[in-house]
Image (cartoon, rainbow, N blue to C red; front, side, top):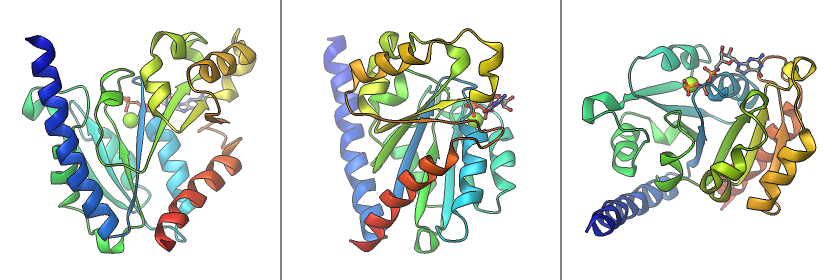
Length: 222
Ligand SMILES: Nc1nc2c(ncn2[C@@H]2O[C@H](COP(=O)(O)OP(=O)(O)OP(=O)(O)O)[C@@H](O)[C@H]2O)c(=O)[nH]1
Ligand SMILES: [Mg+2]
């Protein structure tokens, strides 16, 4: 019984995700879904990323949190359109579902957007299960979280196209086995794109920005 209910929720979500995908394709908007545990550095990475993409790539953001507009305030510093979704208004969901993205996208001027970034609710489990109609998925894993997380939370690493290994500026203070984390990720998702970055110092940002730009531009051309 329980399995049927879960399947039904995901079926409805997949239908809504396809509607989003059609909307975004019609508007030639590339959608990036950014996920991670709370505090891995999604907002910090996105603020720096958006600053580097502008003005060449016009960005907008939908950011999900259970409560508060703190992340929207931080992202607004870039000057791009930002919509904050608070899931406590509908039960405190630990992820953004496709219908939520569809509604939030209604508040964004998609005609003047090339890249719509979704900062998902901080959670390494549930957001991986919900298709939102995105073109690419990225997981941020900070070096303070431990090398074992890809093994313990494999779905997130399986469904994402790239992993950003963030906070590398902290490496001098940690016992961190870089080889082990890379091995663990590639064991779950062979060939996954990996970028070691610091959202604080912007070390490692060039290849990450190049990867993202290439993907966005490909969709704009088609
Ligand atoms: N030293 C260092 N600190 C970082 C880096 N990236 C983020 N932080 C810090 O880590 C904390 C959490 O960063 P956020 O960007 O809020 O993380 P988040 O993933 O958006 O968090 P939630 O939205 O709450 O899930 C903040 O204090 C950031 O300043 C980094 O590369 N290096
Ligand atoms: Mg955040």
